[in-house]
Amino acid sequence: MFAFTPPEGTAVTEHEVPVPTLAELEQMQAEHAAGEGEAGDRMPQPEVIGEGWSAVVVLPMGAAGLGAAGDDTAGGLDPEASALLGSLTESVEGGRVLHTSLATVLLTDDGRVLAGAVTADRLLDAAASGR
Image (tube, rainbow, N blue to C red; front, side, top):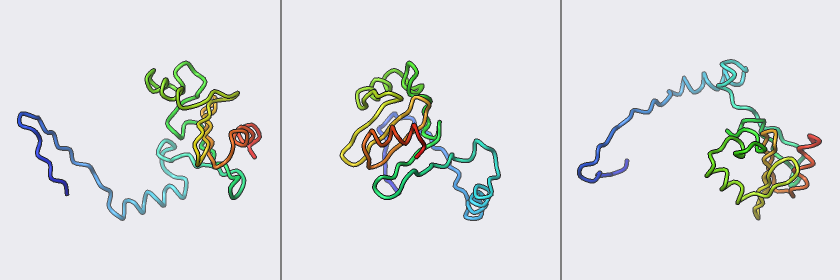
């Protein structure tokens, strides 16, 4: 697929990546739909609060791979990543907010992630009230 010639003297290690068969994928999908399998194997499901342009998506605690935003290293991130997160977000009561021209994201102190094409106030309200 790709043609790559490593520089002379470079050690190259190849790894085989297992690719599930269609039958295996269908079985995984059926197990997931039935709620079977190990709890750690299932992705936490997001919740949608509201409708249309005011909708907010809530990812449960830990679903984004981060811990709580309120600890000393911004969710258990290493210091460099924590500093980057701090420079890109604004501290608000209850977490940190990232503003873009398209969407706003709230990383709550309890580890949830809320996002939507809404204001930070809307995300804070949704985080506090669940609606």
